[in-house]
Amino acid sequence: MAGMVAGPRAPADSKAGAGGNGWLLPFMLALFFAWGLATVLVDIVTPKLKSLFALSYTEATLTQFCFFAAYALISLPAGAMVTRIGSMRGLVVGLVVMAAGCLLFAPAARIGLFPMFLLALFVMASGIAVLQVAANPLVAGLGDPAQASSRLTLAQTFNALGTTVGPVIGAWAILSHTVTPSGTDAAALAAARQAEADVVRTPFLVIAAGLLALAVLFWFLRRRVREEDAGESAGSGGLGLDLLRRPRLAFGALAIFLYVGAEVAIGTLMVSYLEQPRVLGASPETAGHLLSFYWGGALAGRIVGSFVLRAVRPGAALCAVALAAAGLTALSATSSGMLAGWALIAVGLANAIQFPTIFALAIEGLGERTAQGAGIVCVAIVGGAIVPVLTGALADGYGLAIALGAPALCYLCIAAFALAHARDALGRPSAVAAE
Image (tube, rainbow, N blue to C red; front, side, top):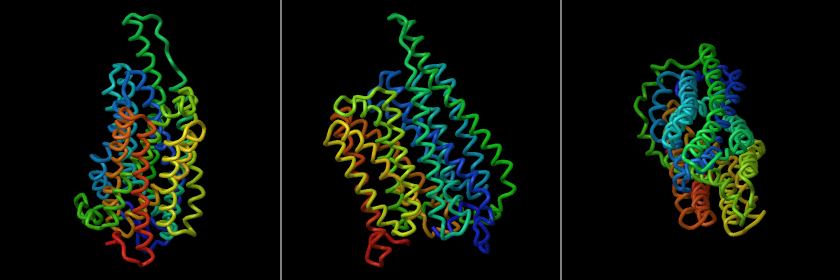
């Protein structure tokens, strides 16, 4: 990740990186926390909407499909946009669009239609896609290039902090409120459904206010950030699809696709899985609180991982944790009771360093074209739309235990990517090369 920048790059003579913009890092950490908290609420909203609209598992995972499909449609244009207008303005655009998606929960709740909730999630995710393209490489460029991986892992730690706190807030604000119809007639049922939908609306309106405040902050900070002239950076032009000729980037994008898909599939079905009598027989609220341990494992693992990665080759570390995730998922699927529940929750710990490490390895050495490469990798986050739906279809047909085979297979493929990169780093023949 040496020399990694976001679109407009820092002056080459600045060892501090990003033209001495290290002061921006605390604000970026706050941003990562905010979007982590907002993103994980989708896992809480999914079981609520499933109950509210009497959805099957496959239909319920359409929430994740619409959310992550935005990455496929928005990330490449976002990479081109960030290259042209600069990282700071890109952050403002992303925050405003994300806030607009949160605000759409109000009319969705008022109308009481499932497709309206899907639209709100799509718009919200479109903003996050822009933030992913602008923020990840920008954080890596805010200092000594040799410490880029450490900074990105630190930022992802704050993202994980948001995803840890989010389920607790969501379980209290959303899952703990169940409205019982006052009667069995159509009017009473409609009133109860409206009240349930209103419960979903309020947390997202609060988040929208926070996101707009951050957008205003970054808008005023933009003039203090030294970025290369946008016209010079835009010289590479286009969406950068030619970068897919680089095997490392292409294989890394596939690994991101599989990782996000596996992580989201498990997070989406976790509450329903823990509610099963075969597993913990937990109540929806208790299962929602336990979901925070899944995301909290990622938080703890990233704190430890930021130190481990200073001593262990990233490819070797990634291979080890991917195999651990596959093993824990398989253990949960083939066991019952506390072992089944906590084995799946522990996958969060194995997830910890996977996203930042895959991301770093995929766009390593792209230089001025980092924003375009980041856009391509972020398109692969669409795995969060596809893998959960496939997993949900397996759950409908064969049960949740069998469905866990899908994320387990994803983790095995990630281990193959990591092993190939580790071999390449040691100078042995490999299918993955930087060029």
